[in-house]
Amino acid sequence: MMKHVDIHIHLTGREYAPFLKYLKTYLKFSNVVLVCVSVDNQSSLDTIKLAQEFPGKVLPFVGVYPQMAETADMDVFLGSLDKVKDIVVGIGEIGLDRRIDSNQILSEAQKNVFKLQLSVAEKLGKPVALHTRGTLMETLDTLTSYKLQNVLLHWFTGNENELKEVSDRGYYVSFGPAMVFSKRKRRMACLVSKEHILVETDGPVRFSGCFGGKIAFPTFLPTVLLSLSSSLKMSYDDVVSLIFNNSEKYLSISL
Image 1 (tube, rainbow, N blue to C red):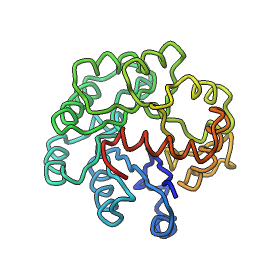
Image 2: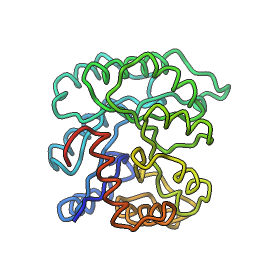
Image 3: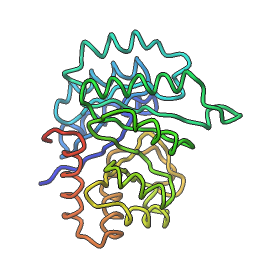
């Protein structure tokens, strides 16, 4: 049976703490691969520990999220990364976020932390998972200065012209549970080249338009995949196979 791949989930998020025992049992017995992203130094370390406990099922991405840029000790981050660089699969969740500041001004700390992590990803040959809220074009401009292994624009919210720009560059785009209730998301998914589309839950985010506003779990994946199969007019099994193959290419590893 082909594995289900969640390309973007925050397994070490505090909202999951009460459910960690359940999640670990789920990981032991399910046919799933979870790409676990991080937001700061501590979550990066926690992600590595979880990946060591579930090798091949939890794939660790380490990184400093835009909201953490002002207080991040990047020397500590780089020192920790150097010790586990052979275990780390990718760098993320990293990026820029204009909505953090009430005046929608990007701080120099955000820009510098983002660029530093792009340099690390370039040096190590690791894929990146990007956060681009309100900053898509600025992010794309920044990326032109780096030769990156593979790029994922997670939870893509751009317009059709921006999607074309992303597709022309060969970047990956991921869609999540919002597809279930958003016609726009389903339409945008149809515009992405099939070889560059991925799926995610972005757990523990809550989705008010579906799943009763509960925090997202990996168990949401089949519903997301079913929605995608309907949008692309492909069988469920073919979509699972497509996403699996795309995930391997993006991650540059065998799952």
